Image (tube, rainbow, N blue to C red):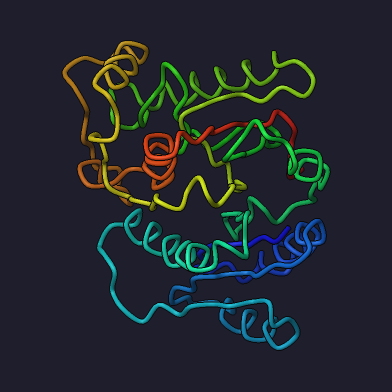
Length: 271
């Protein structure tokens, strides 16, 4: 049972020692592994860390980005994840599992390894993310009925960030022991995947309304008390007309093409 640990890095140097310590704990649950990193030009010691770590551990493979990918942040992140994902696809017979994770402060905490250990052999999920402390935080990547799309693409987004966060926290708290929460999309900093269900999917940082039935869009609009269709705002570092969280299209595409089951565990992975 082998796994690929994947992720993009940009100015993550101060967090990488703890993140890689956690990665080493995760891979101890598997027979063999690779760590696949996409490095973007950083102004800190991120590259130095990767070079030094690779000297100690040849399981690390990292790609260095030397080109301008896109003016849009989510497009760049999607490209980085897809480069890592391509390695998994090229070696799908070797790696039945892969983990996509962020390499920053989110995962530079103490890890509850049992969250992965106790779920790895379950047959009721294809993509699995986890709860977080002090609360579930990644609302942008989250799509869960009736909040099926991106809360940022409807009116009252700041208000509904809190409402949706409380909504998913409540649903997680009401699960029975051992039960998982089904959703359309979730990430929360780290998700583990069964490779065969995602082999035909890619990350896409564009607004992929085409992947979602009109009933899903309407349900979200009604739940968020938003009229007039999708809203495209400029949020500074995110341009709403051109950008959405790259995880949403990845998960929804897998649901469409492979009937992938996206689940959230109520257990807290990092604390």
